[in-house]
Image (spheres, one colour):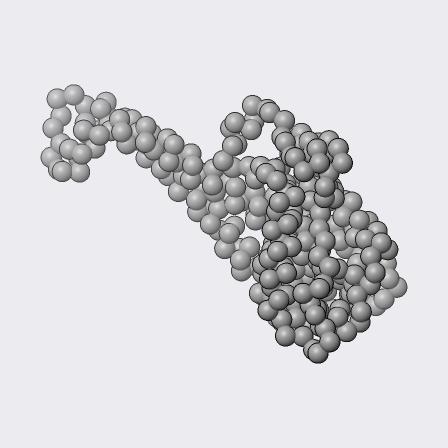
Length: 285
């Protein structure tokens, strides 16, 4: 399986998360220092000798209490980006990887007819297959999550209050998949394929994927496939049996277009372990 990964974009978002977290901690620390102003920096009877000192002495309470929500928001936003784009240890495994790397591991063994695009297309996760273009709504939070048709809900817990701004939140992955499909359709509409091939007719399918083994799912006739990460490869293979293969000319034109129009700066090819093919070599674009 070929993997096209936009490492620059992933790294940029990871760094953004770390910087926001650091900024949040600095703001909280400055707020803590401001709380010591009336007893430490300018105790009673002390007159500031500068305009800055006068401002701090007169507004220490505002600075101290204002830093609390501002620092908390910045640190939480940083944690949100770190959760989505930084390496972490995944529950129930010894794997330390970014979410995109962890997802890639779950697809190992697919042959070279498959191509995984990670942040290299208008959607974060897309998989080119011989029968369709697949997209995935990824979630990495833990907790109890219920799905009833097209309605999603998370069970309440005290930890949710403490991480309300840092968590991804379940949201509505069904809507997210529909949005992904629309973006991919628009992307394919820009192509100029060979005569007789219409890439806009490419079947687009998708599923919701939960990466965290500590996510407890309760499913009641969901309108979209809802999978754990270890179920994705088998689901892909099942869809390959259920759907009609793309015509050879259509598949080649689709592959060529996605290969040329993606924004990846790293390309790797995994060995085709279960197809009896010789391993392919890794390369970089």
